[in-house]
Length: 396
Figure 1 (tube, rainbow, N blue to C red):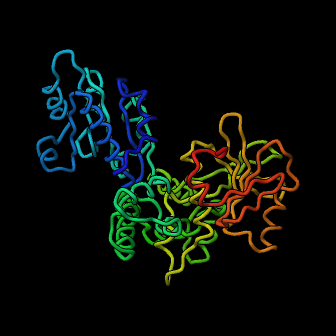
Figure 2: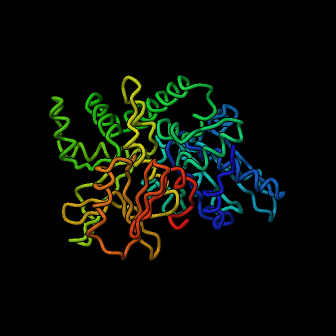
Figure 3: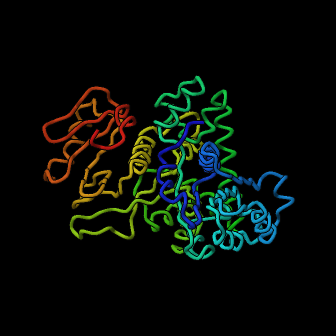
């Protein structure tokens, strides 16, 4: 497995802190692997490490609750030397939050991960009383999965990434049939086990239809009203509040991200409309039929995921009736980004570039497409998808 320094380096300033380090993210995105890599770094430096995976029967049977866990860890403290403690799938311990709050008072540095069926970002403040710092981990971006493929002696072309996404396991499996089965099983686990069971959703058919509609419609503008109207057209009636509640469940389980619209007229974010992006484009792919893939919308979704990975704050830019796919902001720099699968045809070229014509030069203008030919003009930079996926920032 590749060393995911992008995330580890974010955590490094907190390695010695008494704050609880919480590693969050969707199932199977590599949280446990990152925690193991941090533990290995400590071991290599000769530091004492205690790593407990509560999915292992060795620990799940012998450490069932908070008092047992606290006692188990305290027995391994020695004098003045700090102990580095890693608790994987900590939610399996009864009253894990009490144990964590107690342990952070000891001479140790505490790292935890938990399944998103039990340990969601909104719960940290309540359960850990603000005594934590959290770090979000996501499925591989293309640079990462291409590096991992090389490590395994395989290849993972961009075309596969647009279809099957970046869950680390997909590159380990031998064929597309196995990948598809794995992704379907993962989807079932997240939607059924992590969300429906957790929130005791009784309107199962309504929820599943909403999930399918949202995930197959990634990279599109949504409102709660539009989702409600779709469900009504399918003879499934529900309130706006129910739609918003169900969407919030998907966000909390790291399945979707909502991106607000930025309006120049109001100079603010519009609260009632947003674009929705899948955490991984495979959620769209497994809902397609007859082997057809939604490469156009997955391309935009991939670019959004990469921009977030690069550290940009992202919104949808609107001016009057015009819409630019992304306004990406980092510090004092702002970038307007339009995305198209191809602009080789004159009509598409003219339409996409026309969106920039009425905008001033205060922001850098970029268009990203799957074309390898450079279509840059004096005012708009064209970046090919292959080049963009190798970049660490929009400046190079």
